[in-house]
Image (cartoon, rainbow over all chains, first blue to last red; front, side):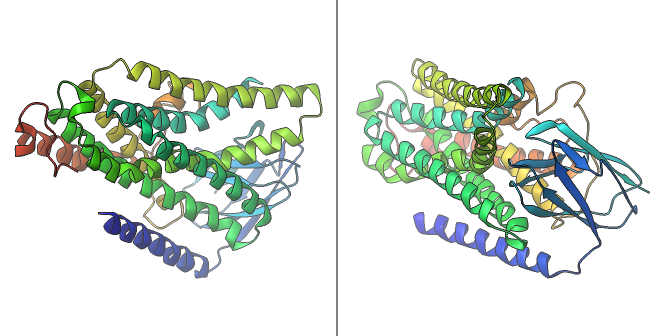
Length: 114
Length: 284
């Protein structure tokens, strides 16, 4: 019983590693920069092309961790203080997608896909 | 202060709920001396959360982009497996156990399964742990001004509140009959695991490993899963105010598959008709 669970866990982990590796090796979509500084996103409105995947390069210039989150995009991503995190965003239908810092609700912004 | 209170309360609630249930479970089956499995699992979860929090701040590049997500996914699916297993086991015993507990519990069998309790406690704490560590750390480094202190205090109070709720479950659960406790918690664990499964599938969907689906419904205006009540329901039964079709579908699918397994086998297997007060040795 214990062995079976160990095997199952090992299999899951191995699968995730392979999948993660494959994802990072895939073609690089265009990058869009987003900076969090003093409770504000710069820029607070991002324009992107609709139906095209892209990578949001989120840099946190604050001294505390942030969590880039968007309910519209269903993305949640911790960005440690002073760090840059790449967030892969899937092809979006035309429209407006709001995002915010879940650790500091004062910081908000939106993505406009056209 | 209120904002940080809600965040840590929300992050800590699921862990408190799970710990409350596993301690009560151990108390119920007369295995108080095995509390240490839950305690160690929980403590390991805290240590792992701190370690991951520290590691994440030291990482950069693809490791930082994908590392936490991969670990998060691993924890979610391990949690789903152990919770399902445990719920199944409790369901079996809810039907078989009546009367005086301590005498009738098969101690050897209970001991054999104790490490699963440890895994459940670990996963419950670790799941949102690293995020909470990073959040708390950021607040504490800013706790130099009055508002900074108020925010940090709010966050600490949120964690204290979550822990109190876990404690309340433990205190309250002690007075419920074993059979009812097993019966009720096996359903709770089923819903909890369904919520986690759906979250895991949702992560895979967002990461692009599963096809993107549209929003199934949006009840954010009614009950936001980031608010206090919505957050509770999220921890308790996996409530989501804005799930994708895939998330909603996987929640339902899990409920149907695991529910069928839990309730049909409980009702039709011969072990449920075992003599009163005896636990069949093969039930685990």
